[in-house]
Image (cartoon, rainbow, N blue to C red; front, side, top):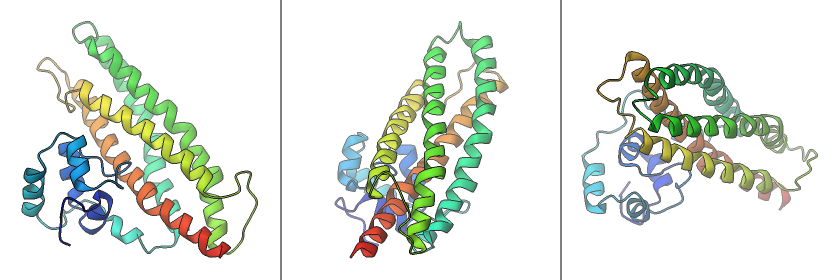
Amino acid sequence: MSVELNTKVGELVMERPETMRFFERLGIDYCCGGHRSLGEACGLAKQDAAQVLAGLAALEPFMAGVPSPRDWAQAPLTELTQHIVATHHDYLREEMPRLELLLEKVLRAHGERHPELARVGEVYRAIVADLMPHMMKEEQILFPFIGQMEQGRSGSSCFGTVQSPIRVMEMEHEAVGALLVELRELTRAYTVPPDGCNTFRALYDGFETMEQDLHLHIYLENQILHPRAIALEAGVQA
């Protein structure tokens, strides 16, 4: 596709999955901010738009190991929600307690010399506190309702339209996204200090992997699942 400054960031990622890691390195938001134009996203990330365009032009086509969101644009919505739970929710439920243990060790060993770690811990724990009930609401309320719609059953809900829980989920995504930005800033893009031990390194590596997974996770929901669910509901009601 032809890339211009008015191209939507989310559409660009859909067509060229290799741009995900490129945008992450530059701090360009493609998940919660996927609705923004490339020019607007560059401005918010304080990146030179001309340099970003040049970097995009130089990217190799599809990087190995980067899952393609394009595959989910046409897949059944039930299949997509099952993928989100199995790939992203289950990963977080397993990974977040591991990172908490590493965080406790790093705080004990390095907290005095690195006072910024106290806020790192607060931000990480706020992310966990936000994500746990968020995932439960998706699995118990939103995803089953989408599945009912896809099967042609209106089902029953306390929210009337699927747009209501989607609006809440996206607000919660924004909150987690802001915490991830702060975590990246506090850790200087997950840079381990010279006196950092292997546990310190494992913690920051884990944070970075979690951030990348959450970016893709939120992208799949905000940019693919939610718009398709809203369009499905509109079609059923027409």
